[in-house]
Image (tube, rainbow, N blue to C red; front, side):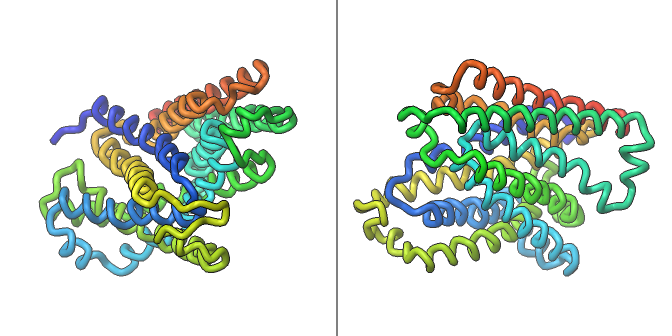
Length: 354
């Protein structure tokens, strides 16, 4: 099937919508500790959904996995474990900063590190970014990204200094700018490892294609490996929290520390929806990347831009900034606009080198 960039853009935006929306169902979970609902949704997104969709949409999944050389098998899992730290703290960022501010900071940083780390790791930073016109444009885009992060961070600091009305406290119950910013920086750095996991899994895509899988779906076996690595990281951390907090009984309906029995069926359904949305961002990302052809350079920037836009829309929908002063609302809007503009600049710079 020939590449179709317009279809690819559509898939990338579907992935961005899924990513920006994944935390929304978690807001409806009642009387479950964070580690309980995070791991419940995670089992769906990191284990059930990847293997189920890959089994349905690819050919001879077990045979493909059995033919993967050991180093090729290990590296996507390792990068997935590193990405798992980013995904783990991504959820914490949403708790402390809210959807719009949290996503803007994390994804802005993810764009920066996702662009800089690969050439540094490969030893060609000078050739790719410093000694070429395209590289200089990419660096300009990174500078605009940093500016956007600074603006939204300043908006968050201004909001943090304002007295928190009851409506704001209800919109973001655990808002903590300093703690959230520190978590967001770490999350942004580690989340960029997902792109490296996909790159390390390129030979797996070739094996899947050789087994007869269509071009739209060859990336799905790679997702199984990368997301399994993410599961390992998150399961260890959540398991430690569950043991420390003695919260395992909440899965069976035991009253939580805050009091009251949890609505089990509703909580499981909401966590399953959140986990499915978290997975589908990458499901649609691999589909979009397969359709971009010579415009493949733009996949990462399209993904980041769409998540930022949809995340901002969700943030305003949940009135996270309703009680902020007009100046602060303009600041966060301007910062997000800078981040979107930066992804366009970076994409254009990559196009010159394509």
